[in-house]
Length: 372
Image 1 (tube, rainbow, N blue to C red):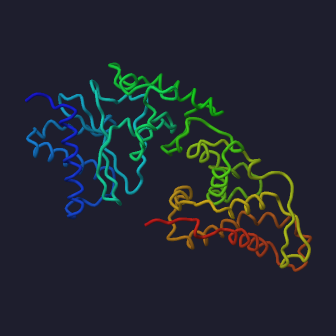
Image 2 (tube, rainbow, N blue to C red):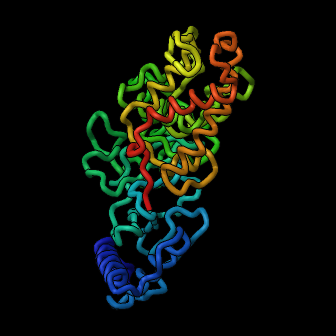
Image 3 (cartoon, rainbow, N blue to C red):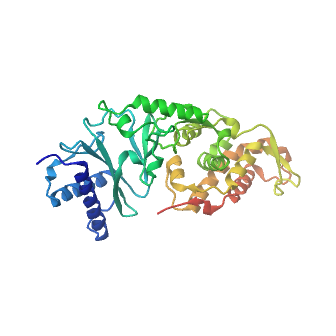
C-alpha cells in the first residue's frame, strides 16, 4: 500500500473525531482527567478510524515524551500533536526552537479534546498560532478558536512568512527568523524582548516586557486587583521579603514590569475611623492604593489565586475569610505610627481588624469567580 496522503489522513481525523464525540455522548469514553488519559484516548481513536477506513492501524506511531508532534503516520510526512484540557481552549505549544521535532514532516495537525465541552476536533497546527509567547523560552501559543487570518503566518507585512518558508524548510523550523520577528514586533510596541521565566506560566500573547504605567487602563486595573488579592504582604512593613513572588508573578504571567512605587507610593492619606478617633487620621498611601485596586470591577479567576497562594478555597467566602486574616496580620504595623491618636484605646489588634474589614468591604464578591 502506498503512503497515505494529507487528504486521506484528514478523513481519518474526521472519522476519529466523530467517533470520539459519539463515544462521549454514549458515555463509553473515559472520563477526562489529565494529558495521559487524553493522549491514550485520542491515539486509540486514530487507530480505530484507520482500521475502519481500511488502513493499517500500525501506521499510527505514538512517540510520547518530548517528541513533537506526539504522533506520526508512517511514510506520509504527516504528524499530529495531541492536546487536551478540562475547559481551556488555549494551550502552550512546542518551543519555536523545535529541537525535538520529528524529521521529514510536511504537515502537522492539532487534535484536541476539551473535556467539559465534550468537544473533540482537529485543525492545522499552525493555523492556531497567533504569536509565540515567552515562558522560559519562546513557545507557540495555540488557540483552537483562532481565525485562520489571525495566524502569525502569511505574506502580509506583519506576518512572519508562510508556513512552508518558516516551518517546513527542509532543515526544520527557522527559529532564528521567528525570534527576530518576535523581537522586532516587541520593539515596535515599546517592549523589551526577553525570555527569562522559570516556569510554564502562560503570558497572554506578549513577546516582551512592558512597564505597568504603559499598560491599558482596564488591564492595569485587573492587574492591580490580582496583585493585592494574590500578595497581601504588599501592605506589610518594609522588609527584604515584602514583594517576594510579586514581581516574578507579574513577569511570568503578565509580561509586566512593575516596581515597588506602583504599590507603596510615598505620602499619607486621611481616613475617617470613628471607632479609633473622632478626627481623621493619616495612613500610608498604600492603603488607599489597595482600596482602589480591590474596589474596581475587574473579574478575578479563583483558580489563579489558588495557584498563587498554593492552597485550595471552597468558595469566595472561604477565600475572603482567609484573606481577611492575611490583611490583619500585614496591616498590624500601621498602628505604631498612630498609637498616640488612639483616643478610644482599641489597641493594635482591633485597629488592624478595622482596616482589614474596611478593605474586605470594598470587594465585590461576585467579581471573584469559582468554577466547578
